[in-house]
Length: 351
Image 1: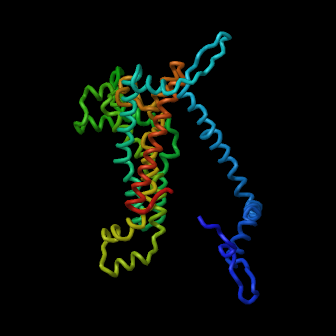
Image 2: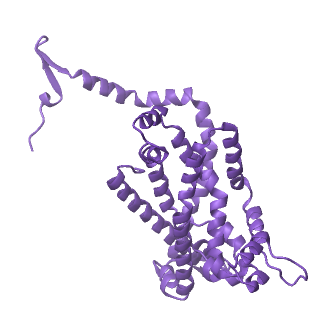
């Protein structure tokens, strides 16, 4: 390897008869020299924005980063010492083996399967709905009428999960043992349409394991579709109106404008949101499942998050961290895989 000489860093000035620094290199050196001064100046100028950032940093630190330390419990086991103080000993992957191939293997793989199936159904049926809503909103010419419809579709997102699930239980409730009682409105409709039998209407749809997945997916769409359409609607209204005019001059109808103008403009947003959704494929919130499930529906309602909560109830806290660890690792691999595929296919990616 040849040693670098002065010619590799400086240029020879014929007029001055000596080596001088390249003007562009001078600018780069000056920028690097004053980089932190510029950063400090910017922070002082926009101090209000950084002040508002502090609560979010605090939340992420306390509820996102600190809990990561608890994941180390997946590789430890509690042992009670002679002084009655619990000590943790490193046991490697013994907890993973116990959960996945040992005592709890049937419960774990059932919860894993239910989590994947619920998420896959949610992605298949729930992901296109906000996109379709955004397209429908774009076709409404009256701003007042569109605003009213958007408020009604956004509203379920701002209602407590407890209230939402209580409404679902009421709408799908059965007659029970109360004389003269009638099923819930939706249960009665399903009975009249012949989609459920009278015995199911008698007991209640929410007590049937075969209907839990459909109920969970439909509730998720109703609750989040309107709020999720905001991102796609923002991408639609950002389209330059001249693109529509050019398409109309070329003889394109509504469907042709949708295909060649609207969808290409939304593609990058759709891809990014799809990658994020795939990353959260196994992340099902336990709140809704806990409020909707019943002992009769455990075969289809038990997911990883609720399974971990049940394990914590057995006082085996270290073992309860294993399902979440498996879930997090799987989600990370899904994000990396989806991002690489998207980068190769559409040249759009998260990073």
